[in-house]
Length: 435
Image 1: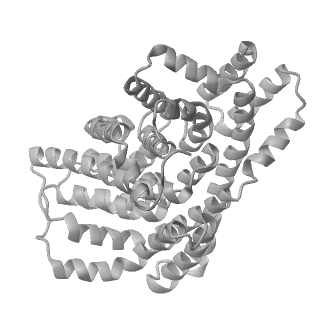
Image 2: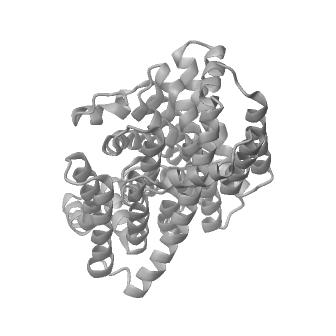
Image 3: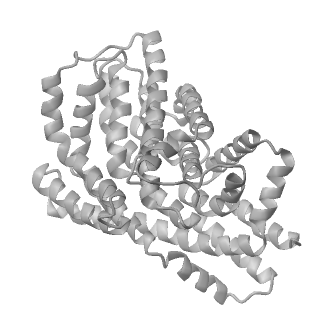
């Protein structure tokens, strides 16, 4: 197999130059692809054809519904209910509010599927609450943004739908099931870190655990948690497709937010839908332009070239798994999540499967790596949101974040080298492995 090294250089160099010049990622992807196609003498109609092909997917129809569901539930008074539920569960521990923060993110992530939504919705409540109880503001912010990453692992997550579509042949339902235990591992790791820091700094405990209080709060919060059951159980049991379950969940979220929790008026709903359209337009533009980029990568055999380069470093599957994580972490520092999924999946997934990593497990690894990237400078969007909410300099937040990076990396390594963490729940429900 021969490689057109010059065309690859045109594609990759122009892309990374525009990234470092802070071009919007969609423009960087599209323009570098156009340069590459022109260099190869291909017609520019290829760009239009591939962009349309990229978004002509039934699975992708679920993405706008999941985004809408997350915005409606996040704006409809759900945050306070989930915070109260988490408080009754773990508030009694040392560093209780930090534990509440982490558990609330696990609950809320199952509704919003977005680290940014989690930080924006819960952070505005949690950070002032923790500071009022004597917690350091930088520590409070670090806990909030770290725990927000759970939201991308706990279903329903529109990023999982994007990965399933990009990888091809992967069940969205299996990906949803696979996210629960890794999300719990990440939450547990962050809780251990928070406990150590809280014990060292003498942060307070909350009220003692009360089963009656827990049951009372569960009764109030059950309406929010049922949204997750509609999506996950419906897809796994084959009652709905992912798209159908997402559409039903939007209607359910609207009813709960407007009529049960009464956190939204119909006027607020229109503002929420406007926010959904803004988010969705960005996602779909990225998917369509990344489809052209992916076409160029495939035509130039870049996945094979990357696989050979990585295998040239070592044939040891453990070393290759570590290299894959390192590449994804570095990409996370300079790119946002959706483009990494769209661009890195066709390149790195074949390498992962060649050393025995299941596509479902690789998807979890990819999403967690991207989540960590959202917390790292220079382009960590969740880091910026946390800094803005806390009104603290970003360098102060990064300093407080350092121990949490360590505990997130520990969770990542556990997920990487213990496949059962990602695969045992799908196996229980009949997923047999492979693509």
